[in-house]
Image (tube, rainbow, N blue to C red; front, side, top):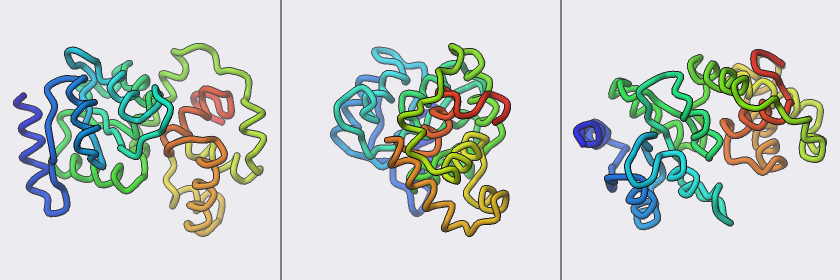
Length: 214
């Protein structure tokens, strides 16, 4: 409760952020999200009644017939928490350590609310690569879906999986940043994915790239 209240105070102090509600457990989080329709949900992994992974899955629509526009930002105590990777697979747009500063917390909320994914930090890249290795061997490349991508889009997808930002991808491929944004949007539409984080998870799980490199 103290952590939740602390985050509420920090975020409400930001001029462009408003905390519209709090939840006491996973089930309450799902219900409150349906009621309040926030832009972003800060989700704890370990909660009573319903854990953060299943709550994330229900909120994002991964477990239901329709995708949700609500973005989920996962909060965790450890930077290599095995549950975080599962939360990303469940539709979370990124994660943040609970000891993050007020500035980092507000920045993370803004990034996720804008429709981007909190994927750039090295810690996130390491987590995705590490837990890709710990899960089952990558499935054979999803030719039916990946085959819809152009060579350039496949190249951009591989760089997304390495955690590069649009600006970094633009520099690597010598493209305009707006062109990269267009490629990213088309990739998400063609693969039926929510955001960059889901694109990275897809790339590892379907063998488009291997953990540790392309």
